[in-house]
Amino acid sequence: MHNGKRRIPLIVGMALVAMALAFPVTVAAREHHRTIPPEVLGAHVWNGAACDGTALTVAFHVTDRGRLVFDSAAGSPTMVRKHHGWFSVRFVGEKVRMVAWVNWRHGTLQLHTRSRSAECPPPPVTDPTPPDDGGNGQTG
Image 1: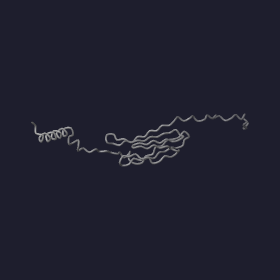
Image 2: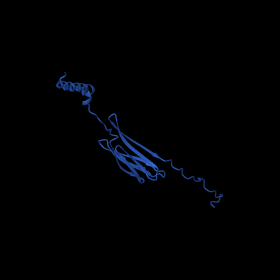
Image 3: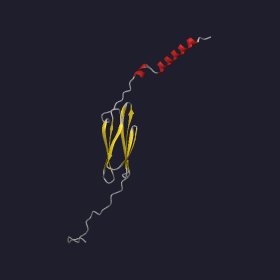
Image 4: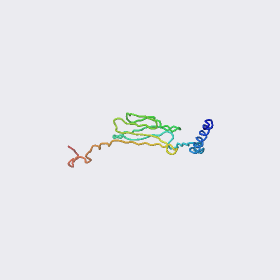
């Protein structure tokens, strides 16, 4: 018959050996270095334009901990959706949208922005030729 008092330390010892093989000390002790490049850190401004030429801007910043923060938008009324790691701005009545997000890739923070706008209608066509005055300097 087996002695139960000897079996438990043996099982615990074998489990510790298996864990040491599966998770070496070098892996467990390795620090996860994360880097935020200087061009990502700090304040940013996205610029766009409405169909009528009105300037549209979105101001945001990235914190030293890698958090993306929406600051403000100007040029037209907006609807803003904010979530962890991204935000979107829709310029009401202008059919222009802007999205910004951050993600970590191989320990480096990356900042992304995308924008989309509907196709603007063509400008009205005007006749560039002046009316014929019949050579007498008077029109009409």
